[in-house]
Image (cartoon, helix red, strand yellow):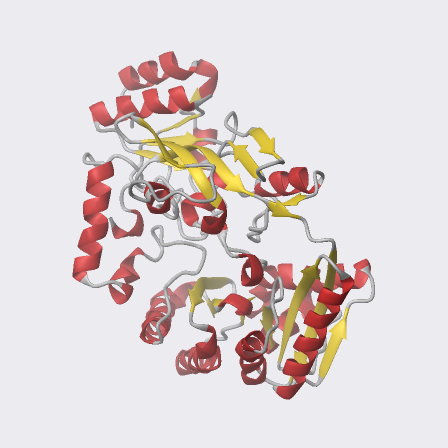
Length: 457
C-alpha cells in the first residue's frame, strides 16, 4: 500500500486523471500473458518524457518500486509488478509516431506505438519495418525493444535489435539520456543502446526510439514443405539455407500441432505429415522469388519432403499463415496448462534438439507439441500438463534447458527471462557472468527501484 502523501505527489506531476489506485485498475494491470498475477499499488500514465523523469526521480528518492509496462503481452512476466509499487503505463499517452524520414529510411516513435501500426504506416510509403512478433497487432515497440522481440521474418531480416539505431531513456534517478545516433555507423563511446535493448525495463525507461526502415520488397510467395518426420524437416532447415536459400520465414509445425489445428480449427493441413515447414520468400524481381522457391523445393526433396506446395493466391497464403499463427491456441486440446518455452539452438543442432525434447516428454509422460521459427533455430516448446503436475513439468523444462545450453543454445530466443525463467539463469551463465549483470544493474539503478527481481537481478 502506497502512502497518501506519495499519491498526492504523483497527482501533482501527472494530474488526477492519470493516476489510479482503484481495484479495477489494480486487477487490470496485475497480469500479462503468463497469467501470473501481482497487483500494483497504483497505476500512473505519464504524458511525456518529463513526467517519466519526475516520477522516477521521486520514486528513487523515496525508494518506491516502479515497473514500466507497454501492452502487457509478454510471456515471462517482464512487465509484472512482482514487488508491488507503481506500474508506469506508457501505452495511453506516449504512443505517437513522431517522424518518418523517407530519405534516410528512419522512423522515430514513442514506446507505446503498436508494432503493427508502424508497419502499416511505413508500408503505405513504400518502406518496411520487418520485426513481426506474433503479438504484433497489440504489442508495443517499447516492449519489443525491452524484450528484443523476434518474429517470423527473423530468418531473413533479423530481430528487433537489428533495427534500433538510437533511443532516449530515463534512468531511475530521473536523468534523461540518449544512446546511439540516426546514422548507419556510430562507434563513439560504449554501446549503451545495446545494453538497454533486452534489459526488460530493469535499467531505464525508454521514452523514444529511432528505428531503421528498409525498402518494401515488391514480390512475395508463400510455400509449404511436407515431411514424413520432424527429423527430415529439421535437416531440411539448415541444409536448404546452406545451399543458398534465403527465405523471409521458415516456420515449423510438428505432428501434434498439425493434429491440434485440424481438430480445433479445421484448417487444411496434411494429417499424414510428420511435420511441415511454412514460410515466405520475397524479392524485387519475379526471378529472385522463383530462384528461392526452386532452391527450397530441391533441398526439401533431397531431405525427404514428400511434397512442396506454393500458394497460388492470397487466400491460400492466408490459410497457411492462419494455421501457423494459431498454433499456440490450438494445442490446448492436449492439456489445460502449458509450459511455453522459446529455446534457441544453432540450426544444425535442430534435429538432435527435437529428438531429445520429445524424449524428455516421453520420460515424464507429457505431450510436447513444438512449433516455431526453425529458420533461425528458435523453437517454441510446449510441455502440456495439468495443475497437479507443475513441479514435474518444471523439472522437464529444467532438463530441456540443460540440454539446449549444452548444445550451444540459449534459454530464450525472444520472450526474455522476466520472472518465469529467472530460476534457470544459473544453467546458462556462470557466477561471474551473473555478477556482471548485477554490477550493470547497480550502475544504472543503485537503489534497486526499477523492475526488481526480473532476470534474477
